Structures are given as structure tokens and as C-alpha cells.
Length: 267
Image (cartoon, helix red, strand yellow):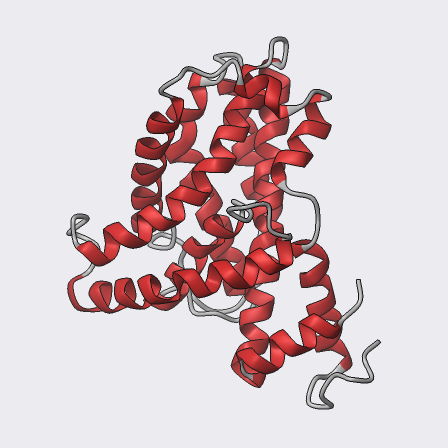
């Protein structure tokens, strides 16, 4: 029921917020991958090397650093315009088809490229929601979406995880924004940058491992490699739309009012 929601929200805003909540309570990416390949991801996880988590951690942090530096720098005007979700999907599907036949190790090779493309798509969606992608705060909010895609640390519900992850990242994002505003991104060893990337990578690495587990299952093949990449892009585009819808509403109504309205909405 919407009767208990403050009158300051318009019908259109409540509709947008409801769509955002529907996205955030949808099945996890791991569950979607399991449906795609027709087998539990756990079977694929057993096929991964014992040192896989370390490889993923290193590759994920490196990919996020590159993505942060490159994603929004060549996107042209920061003025609001519709996002080109289909274009970014097409790019990662093509790269997924090319890499899919190589198996799970292709994930580590392709990760920097696909991460940059995904972050560009997230920034494109942020711009379509009225955010200035030239601002440091917007760039970091785009990077934050990768953490949202990792799910809760202990099986939390998706919507609960969304708010808790944002709260957990708030301090490191503020520190990183201050550092980048003063010194730029040249120094990757800066503690504020390292902490932020490590926090996001710890969650994003989980879905990277799920992707590798899907590709590790025999006969997945090149075609499913493209399908896996499509699913990844679609998942993070949806999360980006939900995230920046909520942030847009927070600008007008404040975080507490938006969360209160979110909690009351039925989906």
C-alpha cells in the first residue's frame, strides 16, 4: 500500500522506486547463471583450481583500477541523454563468444576489458538519470554498483544487502573522492584508493568466480560464453538503473525518506 508514504513523492517517482525495488529483490546473478546453464554453479566451482580465489582477487582489483580510470574519460558530453544499453551488451557478447571456448581462464584474460565496458554502461545509465559523469562522486557511485552485484556477505536478502553495502562503503567512498579531487588517480597506492578498490573487489570477485564456474562446466562452449556475458551486463545494467533511480530520488527527498518509502512499497 502507498497510503503510508509521504505525499511529497509523486506517482511517477513511486513507480520508479517500485521498479528499483523489484530489481533489487530479484534472484542473484549466481542463481540466474545456474538457470542458464541448467546445472548448479557448485559443480563448476569444484572444477576451479585451488588458487582460483587469489587469482580472481588480483585480477579483479587490477580490472577495477583500469575501469575507474578509463570508463568515463571518453564518454563525451556529461549532459543527460538516453543510455545505450544494447550497444554495451553487443560488445560484451562479442568478447564473450570469442573467449568462451577457452574455458574458465578466459575470465581472467577478458576481465579488464569487460569490466571497463560494464562501467562505461553503468556511467551511461547514470547520465541518463541526470547525473554528471564528469564528477568524481558520480564515477565512484558507478564503481559502487559492482559491489552491489556481489550480494550479501552472509546470504542477506538482496534489498537488505543494498542498503547495508552502501552504508559499509560510505566512508571509503568519501575518502577516495577527497583524494581523487586533490590528487587524481595517478597514485594507485594511495590508502584511500586501495581500501575502496579492495572493498568493492571483495564482493565483485564473487560474481567473477560464479562466471568462471559456469564456464568451467564441460560443453558450455563459445555460444554460452556470449550468453554468460550478456547476463552479466544485463544484471549490472539493471542494478545501475535501480541504484541511480534511488540516488536521484534521494537528491530531492533525502535518503531517510526514500528508504522509508522503499520499505513500505509492495512488489
